[in-house]
Each structure stands twice: as structure tokens, then as C-alpha cells.
Image (cartoon, rainbow, N blue to C red; front, side):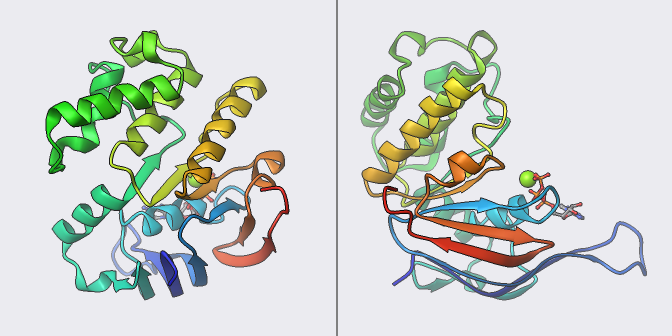
Length: 233
Ligand SMILES: Nc1ncnc2c1ncn2[C@@H]1O[C@H](COP(=O)(O)OP(=O)(O)OP(=O)(O)O)[C@@H](O)[C@H]1O
Ligand SMILES: [Mg+2]
């Protein structure tokens, strides 16, 4: 069974002005993502990549079509149901990190644990391990303002992994980084993938996209192209 199954998904944003037609941003998207699969999402600016990522991440609902997450039709869930599912199963990494500026690296990583059943001490231990894995053991008490861009991105990555999600969604996680730092971040993505986590990664960078098992290209809100199975991914 697919982890993510989108069937004829469409998204129309309401216009800000009454009587104006809405903006159709996604049309007839059919996409399945298997457990553990690494997919990259490409397309020109405005093609709908972030919108699709938000839908997959249960941050927003489609206007039409059906979305099955691990076999469950999400239209049957209310907002609390959606956020519960999201918190337990999905980790997000955004381009601008979305870290809390007054909290330390460790506190930022611990945020998704707020609603977790796992005891605090155990979460803390896991957060420390994750920060160590991303090479920030000596920066746990630093606030984001005192970290480099690549370090902030690694904190965001550790945070996304805290609840051991089945799916990581990343929106241009290397967009603001130099090529050496990008490569380091990509290495971490490969490790996460190897550990069995599915990943959907939005990127403009061809080289980074080619690292995925499958490239899905959006054009004007539609799925334009799919390139499958790079042998060395
Ligand atoms: N809340 C909204 N209301 C109306 N239109 C929106 C809204 N959010 C996005 N759009 C429109 O949807 C289209 C797709 O936006 P989206 O952010 O998904 O593009 P993208 O592919 O991520 O682009 P980029 O590469 O620049 O990040 C754009 O034309 C945008 O103006
Ligand atoms: Mg975007």
C-alpha cells in the first residue's frame, strides 16, 4: 500500500475579492509515494510545488480529489485529526528553517515532542542524539541567530526527525546554502532515506533532484513528467 496516494487532486485558492474566480493552482494530480521512497519535486516558480507539499503534509486540504495517507482517507478527519496525524507521521523542513529565534537548538528540536506520549527524558536524549548526528553536539545551547545557515538547516532537520516520522517533506532545504553545505545536507537526506524514511524534496537544483529515486515535474499545476529509478539513488 502506498504511504501517500493522491487521486485527481485539485486546489483552488479563493480570490481575495468577492465574485472573482478563484485561482486554480493544482489540477488532476495523481501521485503515489511508497513507504521509504525518495521523490524529488521540480517545476518552475509558481508551478505549485509548495502548495502540493502543503497538501501532502496535511497543512491544507485539497479542493477536489482524494488523498489517502497510509490507506486512510483524510477527508474523514477534522483539523485536530489532521494535526495529530501530521505530528506523529510527518516531518517538515522549510527553506527558511522556521526555527524559533528565542529557543536554543535543543529546544527547537524538542518542539514536535510537545504532544508526544514519549517521556520528556527520552525525547531529550533522542534530541541530543539527533543533534549529534547532524554534527551539532557542541551547539545544542546556541540560539538560531548564533548559528550559520547550514547549521540552522541541520537543526531543522533534527527537529523534523524527532518523532521518527514515516515521511519527511522538504521545501528547497538547500536553496539558501552554498554548494559544499548543500552537499552535506544532502548526505543527511540520504542517511534518512537509508534508514527507511520516505522523502519528498522540492528543489530547483538538477543535481540534487537527480539524487532521488524518482523525479516528478510540475508544470502550471499539472504533473508534467516523471523520471523513474535512478540506479544509484
Ligand atoms: N494562499 C494563496 N492564495 C492564492 N494564490 C496562491 C496562494 N498560495 C499560492 N498561490 C498561487 O499558487 C501558485 C503556486 O504557488 P506555489 O507556492 O505552490 O509555487 P511554487 O512552485 O512553490 O513556486 P516557488 O518555486 O516560487 O516556490 C502561485 O501562482 C501562487 O500565486
Ligand atoms: Mg515554493
